Image 1: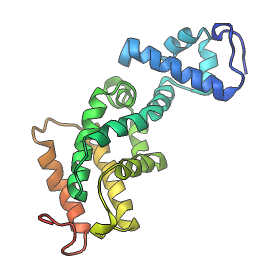
Image 2: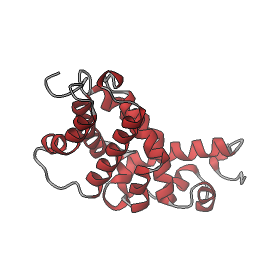
Image 3: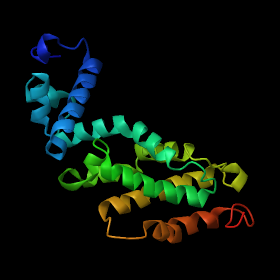
Amino acid sequence: MRTHGWGGQPPVDDEEAVARILAATRQVIDEKGSSTGLADVARQLGVTRQTVYRYFPSTGDLLAATAMGAVGALLDRVAEKLRGHTRPDEAVVAGLVAVMDALAADDYVGLVLRGEQLSLPVVGDFTSEVGQGFARSMMSRMDVDWAAHGLGEDRLADIAEIILRTLQSLVLAPGDRADLTGFLDRWVGAAIRGMAPEGVGKRGD
């Protein structure tokens, strides 16, 4: 590990180096927003670009790692908006709307999904193992008793994939829908209602 720079206090190992790079990235994002680049982060740390390249091969990789570190906080904010939604269809639709609102305003997670920082590899990660973890974490924060609605593990896996593919679609082509909730209810909500056993978790229950 190269030890020059770092404000005279080089990291003791690679783990600390990555943590300090990500912390510096958040600071630069706070100042420069979407124009943040790898060179800006290197200057913030007092190291060469090659030092940062050792841990993150590109600006996209660096921003994606910064975004992943902020996912938990974003989902906690989303969960606050889902209190009281106990039906699976309503909770998922409300969750999708809340996530899109949060991404539009988020300085870290939203940054890699907006404008010039958006890339197909990043969006493709929506359906990866990491993406599945995001969806299941989102679902776990909902006030929904999934089992009571007749939704077992196989159905929960389906719902997680629906969430991810819907977000992927909305990020790639957000459109201009005045009634996003109604649209998602007709699309996603209807699919989830169709998964529940007859008479369980349907509208009016």
